Length: 356
Image (tube, rainbow, N blue to C red; front, side, top):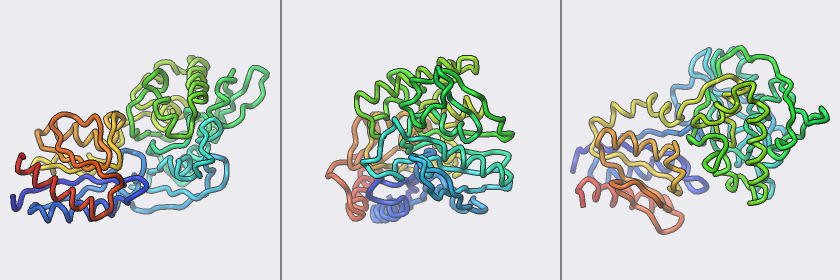
């Protein structure tokens, strides 16, 4: 087993361990198993996108924007070259910006994301990549569009309140000015905007009740109706349109941008496919693996690409369900400490490389 290359693709275990700690502990476990680790700190467009770029960033600029409830907050804009800016939407509209008692997608807004994009363009960005994930919102990017001059109105021509709850009253949209720069959304999931498998799948995570989920879903359908003249019906069905509470749809419809799988974009920049050709095992993980992990999130994409290369995969996850057949798993035991993660990585690596 000595000298076997093991590629470790890490992200934060939300609420328990940072990506850096996961990398350190998983690497130690792989070394203890007698193998050689190669670590990629990655992201699917949500948490940790800027961190995953590491030394590729030429600068990181702090800016003041609106948080999900319209309060001032400081976010970061990263640059990979003078014309290309990277923003994480969660830094302006993320769940981490709110107390649990404040989480309510009926009233939260993506306006701050639009402000971040404008600031990046004002600084000279010809292309803005927007990481989509971890949002506290379900306004389908309409709040973002407000920052660009779009005005949503009801049947009486009154301006709508912020938040996903007001979408049911939407009657018309006064368009804003063209951005003049290319916007690309890096999606953490591949859900469409509407339907049973749409953005509503994640409504409860954002603080929605069963009742408000129905209202939010109906509001998203109303927005699609109003934007039919802008090809809204087709755009709403695109994979990723439902990411970040429909922010993916906002990128497509209001920015006239495009969407990519965030995990693919990050792994491609990290040289993942070339690296695993020399590997005996790929190790990846997250705090809780479930069916949504296979909708375009990092762990699911790593599994997919490793399977295509016929490389074994070890999943490290305290909670794991609906794991694809053939994937080796270390799970259970509740919330893991760093020491527990290291032990699981060692034992799992031994099992996976030995085939037992």
